[in-house]
Structure formats: structure tokens, C-alpha cells
Amino acid sequence: MKARVRRAELRDIPFLVNGNVSMALEAEHKHLDPATVERGVRAVFESPGHGQYFVAEVDGQPVGQAMYTCEWSDWRAGDFWWFQSVYVAPEARRMGVFRALYRHIEGLAKADPRVCGLRLYVERDNERAQETYRRCGMQDAGYVVMEVDMSGAVRSARGE
Image (cartoon, rainbow, N blue to C red; front, side, top):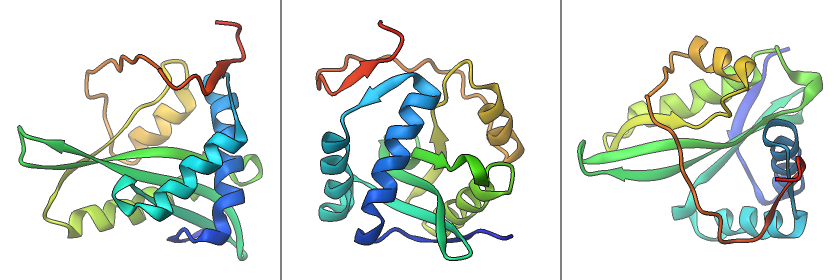
């Protein structure tokens, strides 16, 4: 079974919302409000400057997703494309679905002279995902991501 990657469409919104909610709980132990996530996903379609979603399908069924967003680098005078909202359905894992998504987006980035690199963030404890990313050619960039969440939309399942 080979995954086929395509640009996400409006009809994919329920799949994307479910993938985002599932990924946050599974990987980060965070509860997301599905209505808020749906508004966020729809905003990507309404304002393409926010990013671009892609869907991986096997036998015509969506099984994986990834989005990239842009971050301007004044050091490189180019855009980093950040992988976000990466999710592969449990039944499709270890079948090359993420690799197909990664290679598709990587190909688009290489073809765009404005792109200076690809980045993503991953939970420190998610060794399995980190190994997958290393096999795609990514490496630890040496940064720690810090944040202040002012949205109130995320609730920790760990009680933090």
C-alpha cells in the first residue's frame, strides 16, 4: 500500500480536525476544543498565508496529514517551512505515510527559491517520532521552544 499525497481540500476539514485533536492528546497530553480547532483549520483555507495542509491517502481514504507554515529568516533571507499538525492514523503507522508527506512537502520546498529550510518541533519524550524525522534527514537544531499560551484553548490532560 503506497500513500498518495495531495493538497487538502475543504472536504478534508473533519479529518484534519480529528487528526489535530487526536495528535494533541496522544503526543502532548493536551485536550483541544474541536470547535476552536475547526475554526483554526478553516482559517488556513480562507487565508492561505497561514499555511497549507496536505493529506495522505491509501486506497482513496485519508490516513495522514501535515501542514506547513512559514517563518521568515532574516539570517538567511528566506522562509523556513515549519511542519505542523502532523498526524498519521494508528492503523497506517509504519507504512511510510509520514515519509510520503515529508517527501512531497520537501519537493515543493526545494522547488521554491524562497524556502531556506524545513523545521518542526517534537515532544522531547517522543523518541519514535524523532527517529522517524532523523530517517528523513532532519537533525536536532539545538533549540528549545518556549511559549506563553494566551488562547485558553488548550487544556493539559496531565492536570498541569
